[in-house]
Amino acid sequence: MAAVRVGVIGVGMIGQDHIRRLTRVLAGSEVMAVTDSDLARAKSVADSLPAARMHTTGQDLIRDSSVDAVVVASWGASHEEYVLACIAAGKPVFCEKPLATTQEACLRILEAEVAFGRRLVQVGFMRRYDPAYVALKQTLSSGAIGAPLMMHCAHRNPSVPAHYTSDMAITDTTVHEIDVVRWLLDDEIMATSVLTPRRNRRAGELRDPLFVLLEMASGALVDVEVSVNIDYGYDIRGEVVGESGVATLAESNVITVKRSGSFMGHVPVDWRERFIAAYDAEFRAWLDSVEAGVPTGPSTWDGYAAAAVCDAALAALREGRRQLVALQKRPSFYD
Image (cartoon, rainbow, N blue to C red; front, top):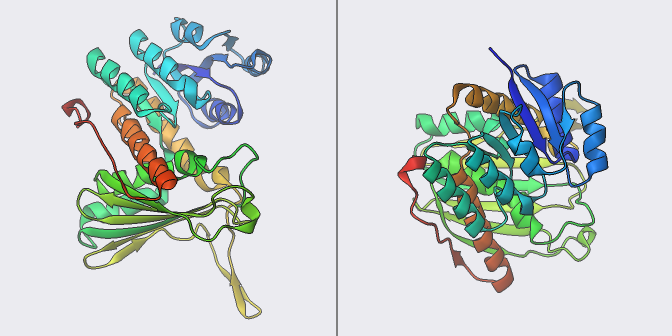
């Protein structure tokens, strides 16, 4: 089986991590081309790879006949341009979240993909590949706890970088819960509210924490605690309350140590530690889908729906009142 020849647009931290994954962790791919807005960085990365060439633009990389499929890991505002170019070229594309920075841009991508006639886009919502979330999904699908009535989530970061804004608590952080609850509950989010609890003194000017309420079309309710300066570690939590039981993500510990009247376990230090296996599984699935010609991961519709909910949540945060989520009719193409 021939290796999938991959081009990578954007070789910052996440792009370089994906290159490491494609070249050192997973079999079946070869990185043939790279580019970045920082051309010196792109050249350095290309020089470190045995077969890669550097392109000066993402469009040139997409046109490269030695590239079978593209990873877009550039800054969010550039995603629309590159994903549309990949669709026009008929090349499968893995796009890190967000699919695009506006609903309108996501819809342009959706319309282009539908017009092309087959799926080419996978969006980087890696939690769908995390073993714990996969087990939770299987439990819900089995009916073991009955229909889901509520879900409690927490997304806790020890700290965030200086450029992080209050809006990013929705668009960069809560967006993961927005996607994963749609997938877990097999349901769309129809409305959202955002409450602002007492401010964490470590948060500076940020509105932190936030309490986000998501109303599903089925009537199920989801609450998300978003705490991005909580200091003690990177802690992701989720519990689904069903009609006849509950299903909860377990602590990410192999063992728990009890000593001196207390018990202890390890808390991940960041998102890479917590979700490294999910990223690996996500890219394994993407490479397999490129080889088979049948995309299976999070779709353009999922990227659009997440953007629509984020927009509604941002409006709820700014206006202090519940907001409806206005979704276009889902094309049967994405069923």
